[in-house]
Length: 250
Image 1 (cartoon, rainbow, N blue to C red):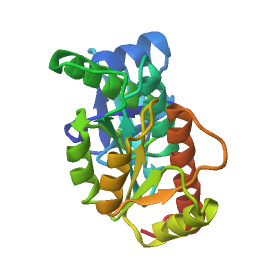
Image 2 (cartoon, helix red, strand yellow):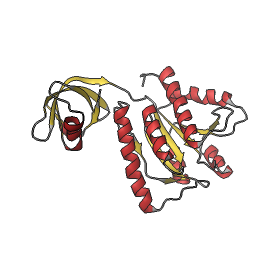
Image 3 (cartoon, rainbow, N blue to C red):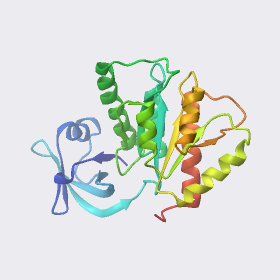
């Protein structure tokens, strides 16, 4: 079933009005017609709607079931990703959104190969947010995750300090024991941050700063993972732990 995001102002009297590019997509690309159903997400909820008309440059659909489904995790996951090279960030954003992240924070670190000027940061951010929206539609999210503007490492840690828990995948002498212990803490959290290093890895001073800020070093296993693999693995571990142990309780 297709999913579309609309502003709350487009919902009135039990009906939804969709125009612009989504109207064109519904009518001319998907070739949907009167009686077809789709999901509309707005303000963190998704309603099941049925098309009544496609006239006058807008789709008019009747809400036939409110709060049809909730696909959001009860614990908000913030992914702090060291800027990778190439189009890896696009891949990370797409998959992280599918897995349920709440916010993605591109982060400048000492060993980042990529160095973005202000103009590129702005254009990249626009592109990244568009990818997040597309992934949210595809995975039937109730909300579109936010891709934060690129932050310095210091500012990223300041943001992370506002969360209930910060996990730092890094070489860990205690192996998976600390990982299991950290994941168990998610039951008592409303928000968790995951800090992923870039291709060049963390600088030792960055690890020390993260731990000083309350970060918990964890292991993702015995193998060395690429930055994009580490991000997806860590988010997946958190997502599964939350789904299995927290569910919809919060």
